[in-house]
Length: 177
Image 1 (cartoon, one colour):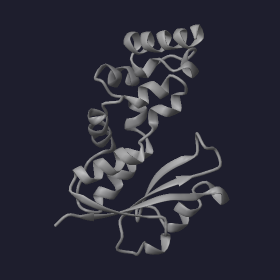
Image 2: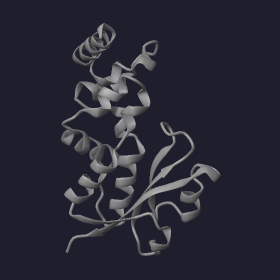
Image 3: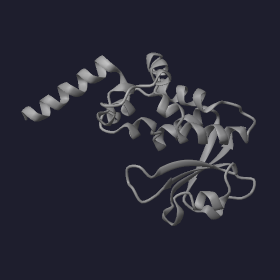
Image 4: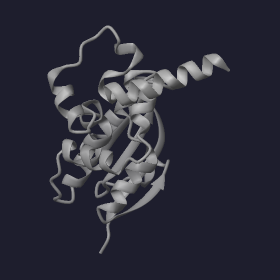
């Protein structure tokens, strides 16, 4: 019980004193870049702003003539994050700062006036379809990726993690009328 209490106190103190961008145990010996610090002071995590979730959303929206940058989208997603799970998980490993969870990705898509059809069947994707794929490779912690069709071809999507690529879900986007 004492060990659990020590870890909880360390985690709480780290979050309060340093902010998300600087706390990761895997980053203790690394220096925070000035760009990371700039965004952290504004309340944002740069690793998420430059990650595949906001990037895939930006690519998908361009197909509907909505021009939002991944940075804008990432900031809007982080503004709505009340659990601050990226900060909490980022203490354990810096890769968690980049996560965009499926639920928050779907919530964001809907907030922008879109309907989502969810499938795992790539045969439902036509040339007219705009879809965001969640892919998984072999590593359960590191090999996840959001990618957009038709920005990327079926071939690139199906081979993203080479022969280890698995489609976990596909979100087909349709604009509300």
